[in-house]
Amino acid sequence: MTMNKNQQKMAQYGYTINNVMSRTDELQDELNPLFIQLREAIDNNKVDDFKKDDYEDIRSKFAAGTAEYAEMLKKFESAQVPARFIGNHKLLTKAFASFVEGCQQMTDSLGDDKQIDVDSFNAAEKQQDEASEKVSKFLNKIQVLV
Image (cartoon, rainbow, N blue to C red; front, side, top):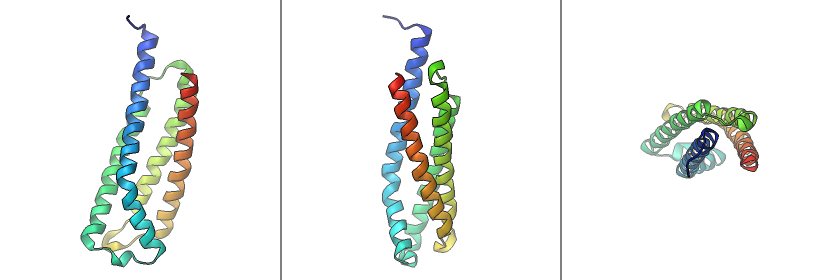
């Protein structure tokens, strides 16, 4: 059975959403333990206890993860969206962009020599949490329309 153009567009859109969100979940699973280490060190005033190499490794992994999130955002921005999903897709893309901004802000808060801008780190965490909730909300709305 062959698909018509609309069905093909729908399948491609579903594939894009699934790919981006699957990789986002994988990246979050990779980065979350590092975030928890930072969060606990900040909360317990133990940032100086990090070995320099470990801290630099976290900075490097956060930067790489943020760059990958930015690439995934481009996939959302360039997706061929079926007409009935355009509104929710725009909201989803905006929420994902806010998530990526929060990731960049958190990465930027990790300065050289274990100098963390705690206010910026905390604001970035809050932005990521709020954006993640919105991403989930708009994904759910899109799934309902399928």
